[in-house]
Image 1: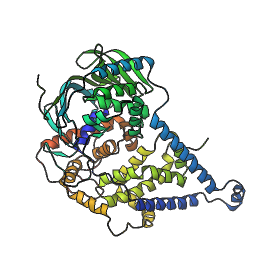
Image 2: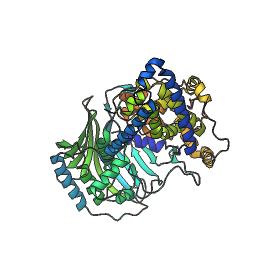
Image 3: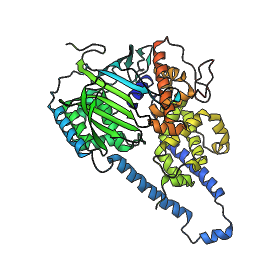
Image 4: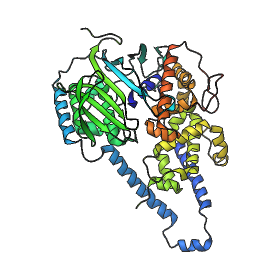
Amino acid sequence: MNGNEISELTSMLPPPAVRNLPDERADVLREHMLTEFRRASEKNTAVPRRIHRRLARRPSRMALAGACVVAAATAIGSFVMVSGTGSPGAATPAAARLLAQIANAAEQQSSPQVRDSEFMYIRSEVAFASYTNGSQTPTMDKLHERQVWLPVANVCVAGLLIEEGERTPLSPYPVVNGKVVPPSPGEPSVTCGKGTVNGPTYRLLQSLPTDPRALLNLIYADTRGEGQAAGPDGEAFTTIGDLIREAIVPPRTAAALYRAAALIPGVTLVGHVTNAVGRPGIAIAWTNSQGRSEWIFDQATLQFIGERDYDNNAHEVTGDTAILQEAFVSKAGQLPGR
Amino acid sequence: MEPSLRGRVRDGDPDAFGVLFDNYSRAVYNLAFRLTGSWVEAEEVVSLTFLEAWRLRARVEPDGESLRPWLMGITVNVVRNFSRATRRHKAAMARLPEPTAVPDFADELAEHIDDTARLAALRAAFGRLRPTDQEVIALCVWAELDYAAAAEALGVPIGTVRSRLHRARGKLRQMAREPQRSPTLRQSGGYVAEPGRSAPGGTQ
């Protein structure tokens, strides 16, 4: 489960402003590069005059190169198409049936009234493997409690993580000495508001398309080019997993996410699993050469109750979680009333 | 069969490098800025990265997916060995037109950002990590490569990427707890070495 570690690192080390090379300068650099390379390839491909004349009857180098560019553009275009829409096919019939039931159950949940100033509170038990000193063999953490408070409406409002006795503010800004360093006025580098698919708030989740195909296309588009090892389908599964992992998902969005997952080729069903605290469930899984990720659902209520990751190479469980409590509270650090 | 982009890069087709530049120069530029903290240096790193990619093109496997991880790995190496890369491509870099002398609005903006506490805090924390850990963060967190792609880019096993990230997280958590030290200034080559501590290598 790369997501947690990466998102924590991101919160501790927010990237500085993203900026494009000014167009004119990019053109200068590009032209300089191509001039250097043409100069180099002319030097390397200089051929004796006699042979050169024989080659002259073939299409010229430049014409060939031009044809290649067109071919490459076509190839790249179709690659983008593929990664924009995923592979043909869908989840296995058994997985699709279960996901349809899970989606229906999610949709039946009542939609809570939530104020912008509130926080999502999620309490879970988690254990993840770490790989120490470059070892290929994972060592599992001890199962421990994890509590997060995430802002409902604005990613710039600091949330909070309490795990293993440590309190870590969660913020797109740097955290120094446990305090968020606020941005200077007018600083453009962090976009406040409801966030993105890769860093959502409750309001963002509410705004996602509820048509499963539209939602999945948005996820494919959003994750395009990322996660080369997993491929677009694996990346889409992972993204949906990231969205449901530690969040209160609005009922209609949850239903759409599960229906979208049913459209991803390679998604399978795993029967008879238990979450990290031993609650029995049934799982939806994604497998590749590295390992398998499972979303676990309660057998009776079909609610999401945790996750499990399995490393195929080490033949060990590398992630094991159980969701224990979810609620909206008015302040970060506040526990829900009973 | 049409030659793939990889195949054409490998064969030294300049136009294939044009395609690479169009697709990835932005990613290279931003990664370079994050590692060096300087937009001007980042621009030179873009040129050096593509010059290095040309030099190393024979190592590209004909089959595989995006060349982005490969270029990100070269970027990290160029930043790490900035002066060596500059020396190697001295002649080509001498032919690179100078940036225009008048700073544009964006440059002023960048200077403004440089002054903020936010960036200082970031650089202070980031700069105290081992260079090898900085590279893994740059690739996995900022360039958004997955663990396997970062491992490929850096030429290390995937377990090493995981353990470096894990170590960096532990160090950053620890730093968040301890009293703040004054930010260390950036030194040549883009990395900030903690005083009294040997820089590269690590014990992997």
